[in-house]
Image (tube, rainbow, N blue to C red; front, side):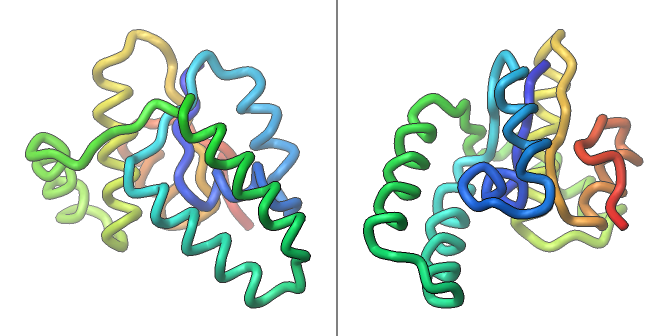
Length: 145
């Protein structure tokens, strides 16, 4: 199984919150972890936002950031390209998604279409889960509250 992780899912690997256990189990089970190249900027922005909102000690933050950077080297990344833009064009026309959400969903579709292996799309955004399922992609979790 290939696990595509949008930023909302990827964050759960580094910060304990609802869904973290599921994300970590999926990470351990997957034969490959995939995300969009834009997730790097999204993750860094989220990490620094969390340090401003929650009192995280500098040493702990440095360890989290180092862990993410190590993992990033092993994550398969989908680059933004003309093919991806064409796929996003179709998705955005039919589904009410934000820009980065459309990038993630289009990236997952491209990987799913190119791979004989089952793809699971991990995300924790209700609209994005619904759009993925309408496009025939298995999601983790299957639905949100």
